[in-house]
Length: 499
Image (cartoon, rainbow, N blue to C red; front, top):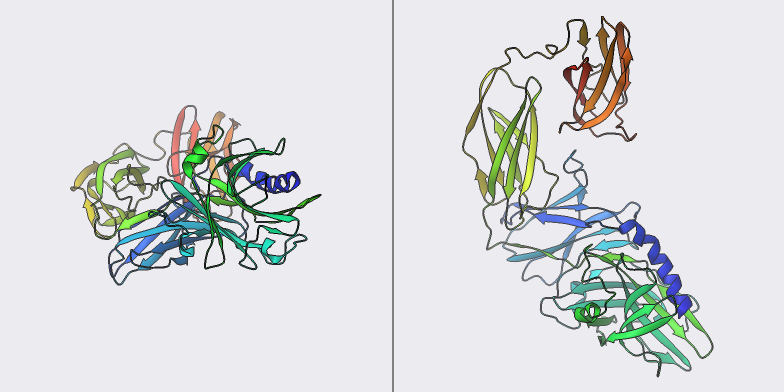
């Protein structure tokens, strides 16, 4: 058993380091309106380094028996939705209390939330389990029978219990044959616990050695201790179902909490054979990342969203920055998120995609012409709208000029080409030797890269910007500003990067 558990844990430990302190899924939906699309959004941060993964939403109406699974598309809207996946669903009748969860991965590597087994049904129906990665048939090592050849697993939870299922080739789960005993286990591995300890629900019946239960395994000395009982049953689907009380985990001092501060854990299933003189690992599944969470949106009880505050910041001659605070106690995302300025509509964005505790939405527009300008904000969750009163601002460019703050002997030229794709040239002219700084900023006013910080002689100077930031990484498409500072005086111009 020592060899089998160590091999399985080494595989799992390779992924633990990469998974530290990440929220796997940050997701929401818009309100459900019959005859209109409900939009699901989720940010997924890949903890496993999964190649070519897909992200899916799994949803079920109140009276539906099965979950519908749909692929989501990456929005790639810089900078606020660069890691956000989206999918729309049209409901032609009320789904009632709609529950949904997100999953991502490939056939064999999976990160997933799951449904909640609210009624503590045992065994749960197969549709209630979030499926983990598939395991191919025929890959078991020296099995006495094909029941040791795993093909998949899954998990769900309730307030007090956790449920797991295992699939194999035969749909039968014998615990012995002749002098050999068989062990079937589902492991739980919190990332921030020393990697010599795992917990497992185990189905086995080897007299005087091991019986069905929840176990803690100390890999350093191969010892194990029994923490509590489990329920177990071979269902009509041929799966082995197991369930245990979450309290039995938490009664162990080494257990970090359910589901621990990170919000997720790793799980892998394993089969072993124990003989009189030998022991062997037969099969195990690749680790899956499990976040015990399901999400809800209630068609019959939607609350109107609110715009709790807003503000405007002027950068004279350059831009106007607007932000608005959006609150939706149902955590419904804003389908409409607009600034209406004069006759124009401007989409707003937020880095914070959890809306039941207020999210700050931002947009920036170029400096407008002189005169009075009128604006208001409008946000909608797909069902109801929140709109602010009309506000106004007077704009004057008197004594404001892009070159006004520079000495007469200095000129900052417009970059060329503009807009640009791969690279652009920025030029400036000096009539006197001076110390020069040339800095690129993004639309939030954050420095991207300093192109020049040096003493320059008389004449025209040029520098190429290749769209890289100070860390050597390519920046995204959008509006950027470049600032020339000469003798503590500065000028700013705008440019557009288009990919």
